[in-house]
Length: 496
Image 1 (tube, rainbow, N blue to C red):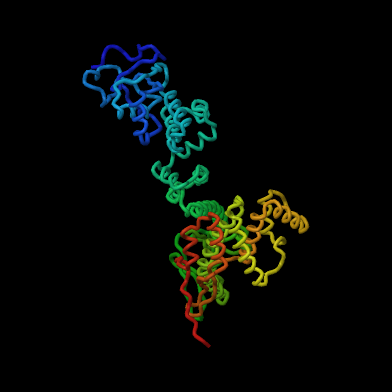
Image 2: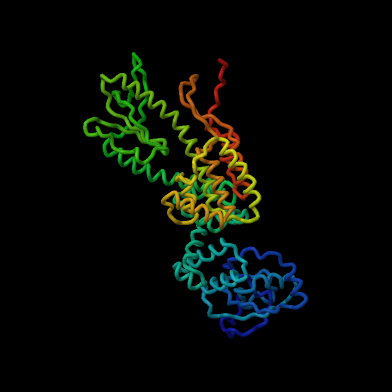
């Protein structure tokens, strides 16, 4: 049994020398890793503990494995400030430590004090801060505003950390060790899908993170658009439970058979992630012609009732559907290639123009500009909307005429020569849509296909950006090497 003397009866704020066996680490200390204690223990062994620990009376349930048998029944104390000193003092062989007993400190105040103390010493990782805030919220019902006031943080910081606490702790710490920033985690938490957040969390801090994040955002945007398309098509088209199957009739006409008994429908259109918003609309003849829709596999297929005397038109529609199916692969390649271009473009837009990179920029920029002019594309770059966009985002002003564009260029070059040269070089090299694919009709398979195309200019763009710090993703590397599974095998063409 515990001693009848209660710890709560000890005078508050007195400095007491408390046996080290009666001091226990606070179980809610947000700092889990105390680090290397060797040097601190040697200092304590030589000079003693020069700064008091702050402790609170421990509940009766606390048990201390360091307490000798003759002290088991004595009142114990939880350390609020001084966890490293306590651990180092044990290594140094001390038997008692100077402590200030704070009897009236509430449990939530204890957590807030430990958070504040560790943060001032820069001893906590952002995730440890996050878990401390989460404990104040869950265990003590504190709102983000109350936590901010209690711990001395901005409310926005508290809310951001609480979102961080929802993620897998081991993966967060791993990402931080790999160099992930708090901004990366804030961008990650904007994703609504838990699955997308988990997938991007696996890549955070690596060269694949930005590509994964952009892909997840594109997927979320597509799902929102897809829901709108589905609502629109169901408003005028009859929903089909199964996707119609194509069948050639005598004479080459094609129809689609579905239902029991089967009936004929004609293919009209496909709406997928690669369809533009402007293309998704109700057909003009929807009030006079019956339409059907099948929703599945990330696309909406629209059919219309078959007109018996339109066999030739039905055959044309079959060819259109078959072409659409094979074009989908090409459209996907284009979309991925566009995303990779935007990653490169964003890197150039946000580049800080470090003086240390001037030689790299000037050297490779000269090479790329030479390629541009040798290619014969000599129209003035400042007339291009995409280049105007790069200037506008850099200056945050509107460029509404060519004369102003020239003045802007001169102003940029005078003040930021490396940045200007990088923007000019990037656009002139990318202009015309640099990519690693070509598309064409394969007479052997009777379909349009996408083949890998070596592109030394785009290789040089990546080489330049990587020297400036750009992290190329694995998917971009697959495109660069022609190893992406979406590429078709290019047919062997016979001479003559």
